[in-house]
Length: 446
Image (cartoon, rainbow, N blue to C red; front, side, top):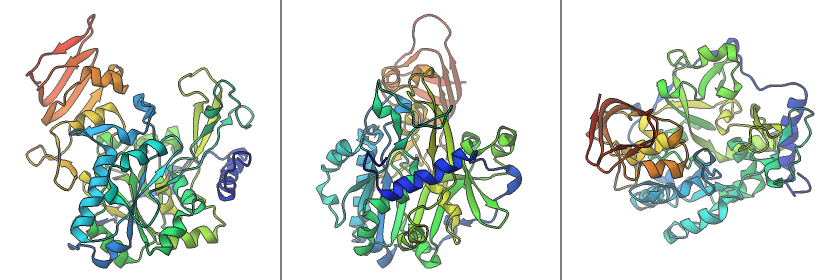
């Protein structure tokens, strides 16, 4: 890391987690050490508020380092067209500009990019010159070495040395804000409140009502949570520690014997949206107090050095989750929000849903469930024929009508024509040779 000119706080943070790994730590959170979270403030009960002067002290930060590799992409995932010909970044930029126009607030948009996403993403944002602000448009996340499983040494991969490195997880945002100088710049310009979210969650928009509440409560950190559904059984949830504090538990931090409790959506009711509100003054103070090492819980991910070659050298990637900062700030809170604030696109199944008429794009560039729909998103499951984006777009060239769909399951090599409508619960299974085509104008049900 020193040879790569990594800043000292990034090196110290990696050392902090490497020493835990070397000591045999696994980062696991035992079910017996936590309690379900019940008493949560509800955003729906907050009074209406336009944010007032507080909005002029706020900044929107979006995590934009991902390449969408799980969908076979090799460029910034946020440049994928997701709704009515607009990319994620188009939608995000328009959301910020709409709120600026409505409020008159400065409201900068700042991206946390990776080396892989920076150039293309900033070029795309250049198409919105009115986004110009008094702070830089982005800062870079760090990288760290992948660690061999057998001897805990940094892995060597001469065939592609770039694969010897990995991002430290989105918990790196706090260290990157510090080392890039962005944190100090924001504070110097009078920005005290940050709304932070993933760029692939189009439901995550700065809500002035929540911002005003956050400022009134004088909390250092708030994590948005929403009611878990069957689709969220394997997603991270917020729980309470024995000492009364809060924590975030991810799947990778759960022992096999605790998975039944982890996936019990009646026991652990609140799913972590990864929409965060942070008082930047409190963050600066906490980082200073901890010498730049925030000390988020360790997540140990076991992978292979070449993700595309399962026979390549087994490695550990040491990661942290940005939502885990809920366990660092003593006055951290959780806030229950409606499901519409969590509309992520992680898979082509998610992409099918958001591109469909089950969601609409409003004049303020909000992506919301269709008002004439079922009140919730359909549950879509596509098999491996659709996993990679080129294969998906070859088989689904036009959006489906899913506004009246409860669930859709597709297994086999299936191609959808134009103007296909799906209603209720539909299962398509094709086991024959060749590709099954669903003809133009088909209405599927049952």
